[in-house]
Length: 113
Length: 116
Image 1 (cartoon, chains in turn purple, cyan):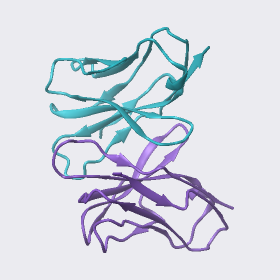
Image 2 (image 1 turned 30 degrees about the vertical axis):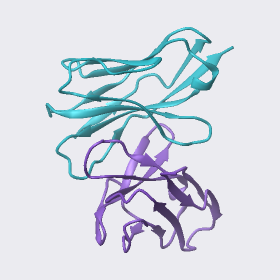
Image 3 (image 1 turned 90 degrees about the vertical axis):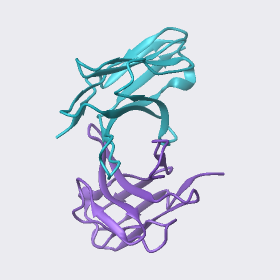
Image 4 (image 1 turned 60 degrees about the vertical axis):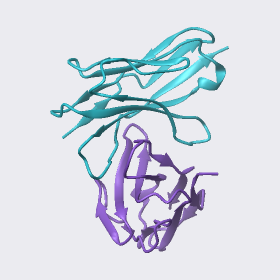
């Protein structure tokens, strides 16, 4: 089954404790992206990757890191999480050709205390 | 910068009735894509319908259809014969055709409540 998986689905942590949210897709997609969703703001892009070893900042990259060492994986790293990073996070992927649909992961609910 | 506005934080409709969700956007581009996504309580983002700006014909997917008014920069979603399973957050999103980032610009969402 074609899908984007994220782990963990739920995470409660404390300020300053490094964490990684994994994202993996099995569709051989070149493009992957991370978004955060906050009430009243919709989704905002954090980072994206056009292909292996190619990453770039989205609209809200501060406090986040990413890596793209393999085509299928695109982990999101919070080196020193803060309470303002409490949010719902989505990973998405798509092929660089048509169709234009982005496939979304199930989301990760992160709470930073 | 492009923006997407959903002016209705919440809408409610009686089961089997028709409801229309509003979306407006701001862009200086002539070619772009517009999308409606559904987010049920499971939080999964599900693509409902897609519209290419260069197509004058409004997109339709079963009970879902759009009213695309390019000059007015309006992109509303009509849900006919509403069902309990339609209850969800609905997000309008925009993407430039020439944007190599494929970035989606999102509205704030509309919560749709279906009354049995």
